[in-house]
Length: 131
Image 1 (cartoon, rainbow, N blue to C red):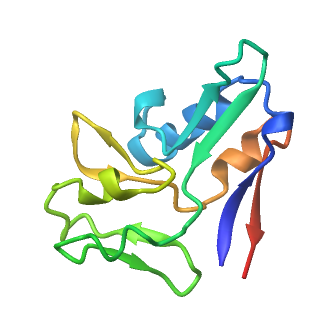
Image 2 (image 1 turned 90 degrees about the horizontal axis):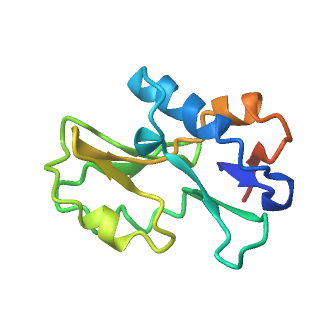
């Protein structure tokens, strides 16, 4: 299964990944429409937390429309045609990596495409295969 592995100790908070993600999927740089979020550590240090789906799949069972499934690659995806916009998956996600936006009916999440990892200037992101 492939996931987007994060290295928070390398993150400088430049937010390039957020812009690349939103441009890739929504054709505009809008951090609120990114499936990856860079959060500042609340301790006051210059540390960052990278919030992104780890393809756990816990959301699959809670979807009443059966719009969420795991591909053969291991990536969890949402079928936009089947999704009813109930957001059960958003509330259920144990790592809070399923996102919504007022302009979008269907929630969105990382699909481990790797575009953000390609553009990260500090290599804080990497697509890896895990078992």
